[in-house]
Length: 598
Image 1 (tube, one colour):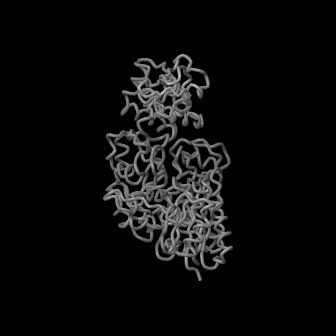
Image 2 (spheres, helix red, strand yellow):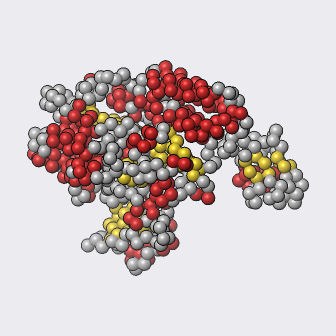
Image 3 (cartoon, rainbow, N blue to C red):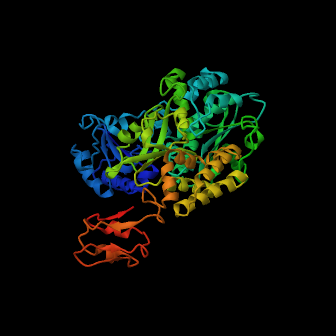
């Protein structure tokens, strides 16, 4: 008889932190103490608090352990699992923001309190490689309902009524996309595709869903197939996501064994099969037509639209393409109804949105919030604020296609329309937080550099225009900027937005245009004063020693690789600016923090 369950995160984040060693140690200790029949170990997907991995939760108590190592396992087994005494030094006990008292349950902690998990509802809860655990959480009930109680048109209408918009970036109404592809059922070959390419820097939302709840995506794609009259689906997933690929493969095979994929599903005349196609890591293959071209076996390049994929998509046939998070919402919409989903979020942005929260933030991880949640709540409550006493400066949403939100707009409700109105966009869900030490010109250069490297080169505005913009940014950050450079960036950016072939090219200038909009003074300081206000641009930085704080220990001088620091013991040292290569070694070595970068 099982008296306790130990849930251990086996997502990519915790795996990289050593959860495999923790799992092996736990299995060995359970066997050593004869507990294998009493204690069930479950490998789950991501819990969300990636910064604290490896993570382990022991039920029925719900004790949440963080940063567990293999060396901690004997103590956890002997003290907690055998004697019922939780190991307090490993217990996650984040105080709720209001009142400062410790939360009574995990869902009441500051990190989880403001979240609402729909797409992530099973991540960290079930074993993603056990179909029966998914079924035990109402898995495949939505597919059964569609096939036995609803017509295809009724399914589409329900999705339309829910108001769900695509979570991949553009925010196009999902039901409308399905409706466009629904004609001529049974007479024309059609396809259902899933975009799991997810190439934005710092983004790991879709990967985490596939690792923690692959059956939700499989079920939703079968529902989509029924709705439009398709019998074949493809999941296009990055080959760099080995855990996701392995769990998807396992889940598809299990679904076929249980008769939930294949011929005559649920005893009906509906048949649907699913295959995986691996992407080689080209960012442009996140664009729908480029993705389909890649599935067909060709180089991933966008196609002109129209015709749109709903008319002429994969192999020239009507096709719908949604991303992982969009599909993960569909089964819950079918089960709970359109009004339930519309009751979450805002008037024009219904439901929740998953974000990969990263950058200068205390709680790096995966979060899911109702649409309309203020950015301040995400950063200060869920994210735990900016570490090291630094000030919040900006947040980048939408990755290379998005923009930067400045500190003065921190109370902006996060939804599709509000983000577009302030010059950013939802994107697939990357949210990178920046503090006072980040240079916004350098940030713009980073994202544009990524786009230049990843451009497929098919259209001139993207291939050449973004390169010219990057060259200007490089000159500015090297102290070679000229009057008129800002205007040139704006002119080029607006031209590219208006003329590039695909959505990726059209949005490539966004990081530059949004930083000019809100941080124009930083651009001007780089150009006119040859100064980086944040001290981040190496060519413009100046490292100095504060004589009031320097104790003359000589450590900086001994560490300097180019001999740029000189002085006399117990007297203030100085830095020769002509020799200094701005490597920062002295900054890190000074025990009194007397060395500063300006």
